[in-house]
Every structure is written in structure tokens, then in C-alpha cells.
Image 1 (tube, chains in turn red, brown):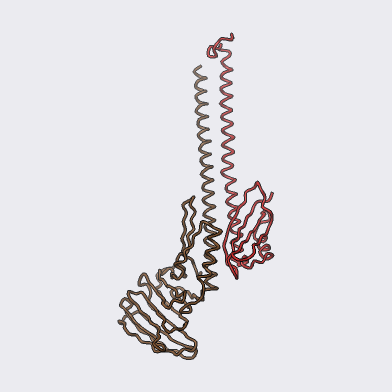
Image 2 (image 1 turned 30 degrees about the horizontal axis):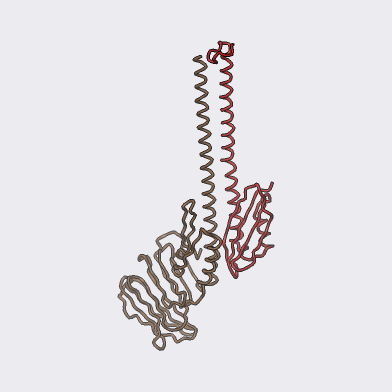
Length: 141
Length: 269
């Protein structure tokens, strides 16, 4: 093969190289696309479902506190015990209660970073004013 | 050469197909994320709605002075008349608290005196804010009797007089009583024609009952608070659980999903 020879004039015994290169590039594109699609499918199918489940669990836990009238007692120990009983042990939680004319209340652990936090909010009546409770939960590592 | 070209073209189409699949999966992932956000917003809306309804229900229980007795066909509503309980202040405090912490909710307390008896679609307008007029507004003729009972502690029980009524099959019973005495008068009337009745008081004061086009107006000019007990009996035409609702007083609106909810508020379960 001379240096000024065009690729399409390659001798027939070198054409296999082009074919192999072509097949290699095609395989590369194929594999990249396959990996990308697999990743995208796993993200779409699993991650989001877990998020919804976390939000639903936060909502249910808070509803349980509200509907059993535990929330309106503003009794930190009672609320904490009820929350621990309601939530599965592998969940971390933080419950923040603010009031229209009373002191705020914070229960639970510090909210971690880098993980999805499911949250729910409810309003409720206390014996003297109104409150807003915000439950944030996450999966413990 | 032709064979290699065919293989190259096949690979090209295979790659194009996979790329299309990749784009499709990306679009699906994006749509899934949108649906997730929508589900999250719906759950948030349901939480906010359910909890505010419960807060309003609790407020009514503690601050309205009203009692509701509901069974399959009979609704009984008992309240002071005029009702001087300051439920407006309580609901206004709830409004302020919610609106300052949740911008997607807007309250309008104009309808807090309007109750709906469900599923009969019958409206009872309360006598809050010292109002001496109480209204009952049916939307159809699916009811067959009224019992109006007015109780005072030691005010003289007056005579009950039907001033104007046509005979029919609708039963009206009016009861006036104090702690020791009771007087009652009942009549079968045509509810579709005007009716007027009154309970005499002293110094020209009285309780007046006027029915025009089925709409009932009850006026208290006795210059004292009485206990009003009104029972309405309906024809049993539905299997739906009867309950008392408050007309909508708030709207939940999430602009990003054009989601609006302006619910009736269940006061009895």
C-alpha cells in the first residue's frame, strides 16, 4: 500500500480492516445506547416508585397522628412514641410543628443530605390555636 | 463489497433503532417524573384538604354551639338562636395561619353560615353573628315533615298560631317550651303554597315562620336567645350516607398542574 493510495482503493486483503473498524464502531454505538437505555429504564422505573412510596408513608404517618388526635396534644413524648410505633424501623424522620400563636416543636433526627426526603404537611386544631405539622422521612443507610 | 455495504446499512438501521429506543426511554423517564410530581401534588392536595376539613370540623364541634343529629332520613340541627358563638373568629385564625404558611390555599369565609344536608341537597343557613333570621332552602320536594322546637329557660310559653296555610299531606309540628311548660301545634299543609305561623311572646316580640316557594324563613324578635331545634324528615331515596356539609370556604390551587379543589366540608361522619 502506497501513502497516496485512497482507502477505497485498498487491496482486497485490507478491506477486512475497514469492515472490522465499521463493525467495531457500530458495536460501540450499540453498547453505549444499550447501557444508556438500561440506566434510564432503571432510573425511571425504580427510583421514582420509591419516592412516591416515601411520600405516601410520610402522609400516612402524619394522618395517623392527626386522626388519633395525638398531634393536637402537642405532647412531645406522646407524639414521638406514636411516630416510632407507626414508622418502620428503617425510616428516619423529622417532625416539625409550627403554631399560629404558640411555640414550635421539633422531633426526630437531623435531615440527611444526598438522599430523597419524602414529606407531608397537615394542618390541625389545638385546644387554643391552629398548628401546621410537617413530616419528613427518608430511608436509613 | 456489496455484502459489507449491506451489513453496514443493517448496523446503521440497528443503531438508529436503538437511538430511537433511547430517546423513547428518555421521554418515558421524563413523563414518569412528571407523573411522579403530579401524584406527589395530588397526595399533598389530599393531605391539605383532609386536614383542613378536620380542623374546621373540630372548630365547629368546639366553637359553633351547634349540634347535628343525623340518621338515614332525619336531620336535626340544634343551636342557639341568635347564635353568639364566635366561630367566625376561630375560622379567621385558621385562615390567617394557613394562608401565611401555604400560598396555594385561599380562604373565603363568606359561606360559613350555609350548611348543606347531603345527599338531599337541602340548605340550612345558620344564625351566626347575632342574626335573628334563619333560612331553610330545599332544592326539591324530597322531604315530608318539619318539626320546629323553640326552647327558653324561663320565658313565658306563647300561643302558636297558624295564620295562613292550605291543607295538604305535609306535616308541620311547632313546639314552644320553657323549663316547666310546653305547648305544641301540628298541622298537615300543602308545602307548595305559602304558610305563615307564629309563636307569641311578650311586648310584641314573637317567633315567625314563613314559607314561600318552599323556602323557610324563621325570625326571632323576642329579644332573647332561644334554643332552636329543627328536624327535617326526607323521603328515603338514596343509599348514600347522610351527612351535614359546610359550603366551600377555601380553594386549593396548584398552578403548575392547573389543579383546583374547592370542596364542601364534611361536618358529620
